[in-house]
Amino acid sequence: MAAGDARRHAGDVLVVFSDLDGTLLDADSYDWRPARAALEVLRERGVPLVLASSKTRAELEFWRARLGNRDPYIVENGGALVVPRGYFPFRLPGAIEREEGQIVELGRPYRELTQALEEAAAESGVRVLGFRRMTAEQVRRCTGLPPAQARLARQRDYDEAFQILSSTPPEPLLRAIERRGLRWTRGGRFYHILGDNDKAAAAGILLGAYRRVHGRVHSVGLGDGWNDVGLLRLVDTPVLIRTPVAPDIQAVLSRARITRRPGPEGWKEAILEILRRPAASEVVP
Image (cartoon, rainbow, N blue to C red; front, side, top):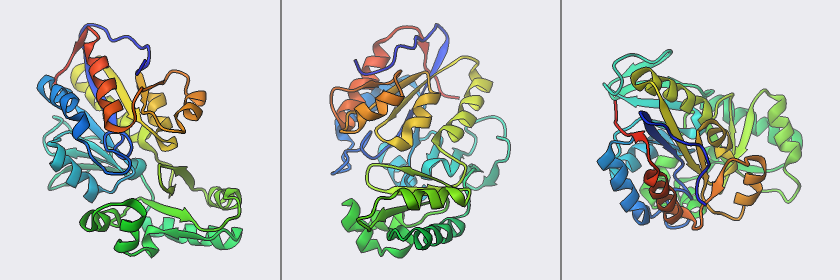
């Protein structure tokens, strides 16, 4: 079984929220093509696909162009929500108007986060290496990204990704981060330090906007890591893409179902199964 048991009702508008790395994109090769058939069906039916990632805005813009995506997107673990110009017929509360559309900033400034990480590391004695201190070549080696994309990954605004270099347990560092009024989470490759924001908060704003336009909305969320838990708790139908940690996540998120296959193959499996269920209206604003 690939997805949760929530039932859609006649007239519901379907909205899909999806992580990228390890979910829509293969964790190692970043290949999305195994999910092509499901992406095409979503596009044909006009189902909004909201990309919600720890990736930067520059990276999301790259992937949206590659995927032909024109819907809102969530960057840096909910650090900001970006809504293309003219997508909704109203302004979102707190949004900044930019040339490309509305931006709702939910995260703390990057400089504040990197300074706090260095202070927490010094206090705890746990050695770390964040993206700010990495070269693009180091990021490339850690992630397997092509050089151009590695440079995009360093253009951070609201979230610092970092590795723990010490062999000591990470808990003293994580507690030191929390004492500074900040939060941490963990994705597939890196820990992240961030403010009082997450993917779920940004997704909640978007769902309110979709409901304002359409009334009833049925939300689907797909993710593969601990940084997706809040989003998966929020949506009506949560889907865990198969990974070694998926059973551990499912233990705290019992409504979620785990796909049979990992990565974009599992993503396709889940989306096509959900779309086979009756009784949803699928249109974009």
